[in-house]
Length: 253
Ligand code: PGA
Image: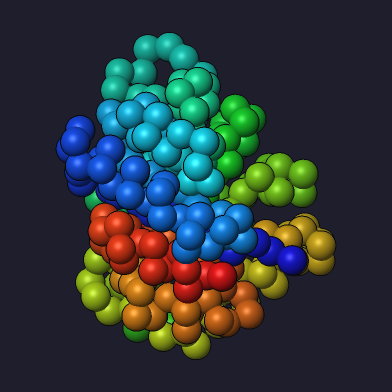
C-alpha cells in the first residue's frame, strides 16, 4: 500500500519569521490532522531550511529543498549540493519543478543529473513532470510526460527508483486557480504508472508514489486523492496557510 504524501512547496515566499511560524503551526497540527498515516513535508527557500528543520523538530513533518545542484562540491557559485542539504536535516528535494524548467530553463538532462545525485547523496527526490497548456491543446500531454519521465529517470535502477516520488503538475494548473479535474489528473497518473511498469516492473510501479500538483486546495484535495493513482499532493499556494495545509493533510487520510 502506498502511504499518502502531502508536500508543501513554499517557492520564493515567507521570511525568517513567517517561515518559522508556518513550520511550527504545521508541525503542531499535523499529527492531529493525520496521525502517522500521511507522509508530510515542507519545502521552504534554502535560506530558511535550517530554521524550519529546527522548528519542525521531531514532529512527523519532514523538510525538503526546492532544488539542488548535481555536483558534490567545487566552483559552482550560488549552488547547493545534496550533501549540504542532508547535513542540515533535509530529507526530500524537488527536482525539475516546472518553474525551474520554464522560467530558469532547466533541461531533462540536467534534471536527470539532479535526481541521480539526490539519490546518491541520500535524499529522496520528488521529480516533477507536466505539460504546458499549448502542449495539452495540441494533444501532446502523453508525449511530453513520457519524455520527461523517461529522461528524468534515465540510468536509475529499480532500487534507486524506490527513493523517488513523481509529481504530475500540469503547468497550466500551477498557481492559476485552474485545477485539473480528478479525471484529467488520474489519466496522466495512470499513464505514468504504466510507463513505470514498462521501464521497471509491476512491483516498482505499484510502490512508487505519484503526487498531483496544480492549484490543489482544501476544497478539491479529497476528490483528487480519491482517484486510484493519485497518492498525494504537491501544494504551492495553499501550503502557505497553516489551516489550508492541515485541511489538505487531513483529506489525505
Ligand atoms: P500551486 O503550486 O498549488 O500554487 O498551483 C503547485 C506547485 O507548483 O508545486
